[in-house]
Image (cartoon, rainbow, N blue to C red):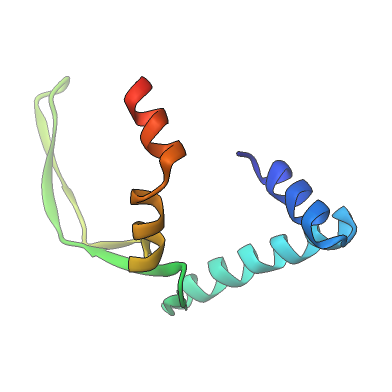
Length: 102
């Protein structure tokens, strides 16, 4: 599902115009990005957490040039779903049917 499809579905379910839904969704994403850039994590009860994960310093190898390089310690954005969200996906009949086909 794309962002445009999400916006269209929210618009039909709530009766709010697509332009207003688009502004709201974009504002949400901006708040998430800006907050995580400042080092803050975001917790949405019943949905999940947007957190900054720390990656330790490590030595990597470029096998085509046979050289090693050092990747410094850094942070990456991550999403951890809530227990209720995970349980809902695990118990979804559509997800199980899709997984069985693959």
